Length: 141
Image (cartoon, rainbow, N blue to C red):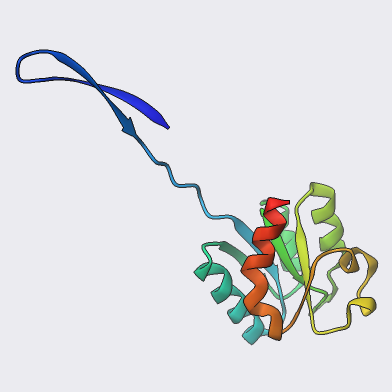
């Protein structure tokens, strides 16, 4: 953003100096639905180090839906199976809202429900280091 600032010199002359004001954007918020505590901590660490704000991690679909009823993330990372069942309803809700998400799984991609199979997939735990890059690519298009 460019703003012109007026000041008077010692001799009383008006001078204009362009001043650049940089406003930082808030970090992108990522909903994390993962029921394994260690994996959740690793995901949270990867994302916060990459500058993302983490919503969760949520170990149950119920907790994730409770958060979604009041909030909206920019992106989401979904384990396909949480403590109270598959997160297909969460994925469907995110798709309905136009929010990109990826599936984080230890299962083979062909074993995932269709709504998750169509999303980008990262295998856990080996692929966690790729998480920030994949999310960034999802934001770009």
